[in-house]
Amino acid sequence: MAQSFETKAVHFSIDQETINRSKTTPIYQTSVFSFKTLEELESHYTGELPYLYTRNGNPNPDELGQAVALLENAEAGVASSSGLSAIMAGILAVCKHGDHIVASEDVYGGTYHFLEQQLEQIGISVTFVDFSQPERIEEAIAPVTKLLYSETITNPFLRTESIETMVAIAKKHNLTTMVDNTFATPYLLRPLDQGIDIVIHSATKYIGGHSDVTAGVVVGSKKWVSLAKEKIVNWGANVSPFEAWLACRGLKTMALRMRQQCENAEKLASFLQEHPAVEKVFYPKNVSEKGNGAIVSVQLKPEIDMSAFFSNLSWVAIVPSLAGVETTVSYPIATSHRALPEAIQQKLGITTHLVRISVGIEDFSDIASAFQQAMKLAEK
Ligand SMILES: Cc1ncc(COP(=O)(O)O)c(C=O)c1O
Image (cartoon, rainbow, N blue to C red; front, side):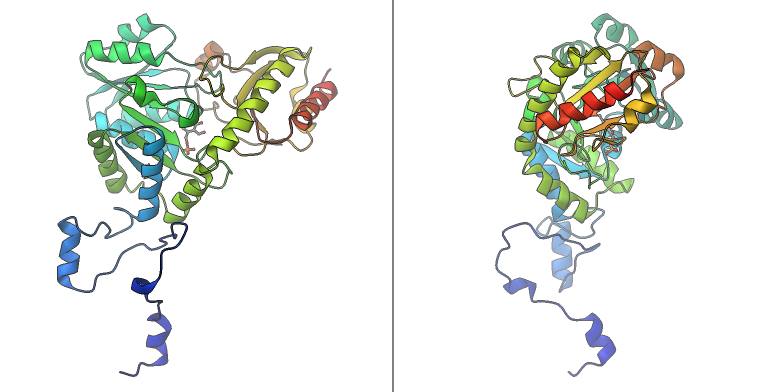
């Protein structure tokens, strides 16, 4: 039947059935999937055809969830729109109105804010304690406690909480455990192997690795992941196909990037340790045999002019995030940890002279020169 111009203009498409397999997964940039018959539509509901509507499921987010699950030795994984929505989904998979969480006080500021203020609105309470002291965790546990929450390498002090302690306490009190493994990545740590129940990632960071994606992932047992997925679908926190595709593309080079970034970070931590402008370097030890992570935090001496330091870093940009291939610096007190109550900032040591460095893949001598110059020009 001959079609008019207007009809032809919207009904063209390549014959998808006859295309041979593409080497890379195509980007399924579609909000919905189509069906030829009512029987075919029905077969979605009987489980034969996986996709109906992108908020409910799409191959690119599924690929991201499955890839991270594979690397974390998890039974299942689901991708979400951001690290924070992965935290939301993981928590709501476990907790409902009236439940209580014991969380580490040394967590990413956005996580702190979410746990303290957003969860309160839906009747989930949180007690923050110092997770380096197991007795504090135990003291905070109440009859309504359901979840212990921490980060494997904390932000910004890079403490490596004892996963073993968390798992032992959780077993004793019949609690679920959830950790944010963003800073360590599965290249360095796989907390599920150590008995943690749910692991989340801000895929915005090392999984994507190029500062061009906002995404998150929840991995764990099929049970926890399907509950988390239910939250992602129903609270509309799905990741877009293109963002998921970019995160998968980034993930393929994560091991190479991490190797180089950890090596540079190790060298930078030693270099800063010896520098007269530096009061204290925060860099973990013994995280894994592959390295200790690629973030170095540094407390500069009070006589350093912070404004001069940040403006003399040459090619090292001030970036309130981390984990790209470029070395960048962030200022926790003004950005990631701004939302923390002042008393907590002081208790943790988030001061005006604290700088968090996300170490990139550049040649180390260039990284060292940039910091050397900035510290020299910032001496009062
Ligand atoms: C450790 C950690 N977890 C979670 C998040 C939140 O991730 P997103 O910004 O992708 O929501 C961040 C963001 O900086 C982070 O540093």
